[in-house]
Length: 143
Image (cartoon, rainbow, N blue to C red; front, side):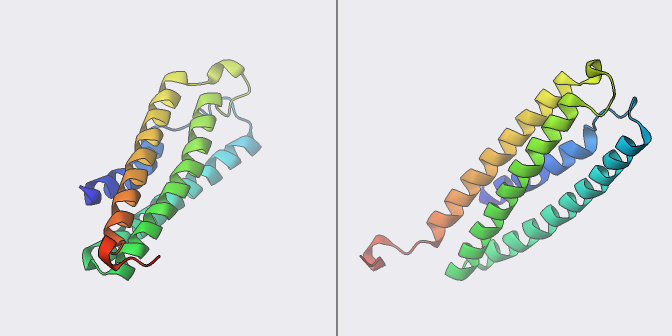
């Protein structure tokens, strides 16, 4: 179950960002450039998410205490990236890049926000489960 939660959490927001894009119809040339830079940054976010997910799954598969700690760290990194880029994505989709204020997309922004919240919840739950698996049993704890 932890593997499925990690995959859902790591891939949910990047894939949603590929499917739901901000409106750039009325954007000026300079603003279009920022939208293009955002697109390339989003592809970088997707790449980093896949790499961190693969590393986290490999560490989780090892099952050693240090591997479990590293897997929890990978889940924390994915959680941070999802919160940061998810909030930016929802804001930009909701507001749009156009000159007119009526070019916003409230329904796609709501869908993107729901996916982001689900991804954060999945990553948080997976991180908690991995952290608990990495703790020593109560009989071996100190202090």
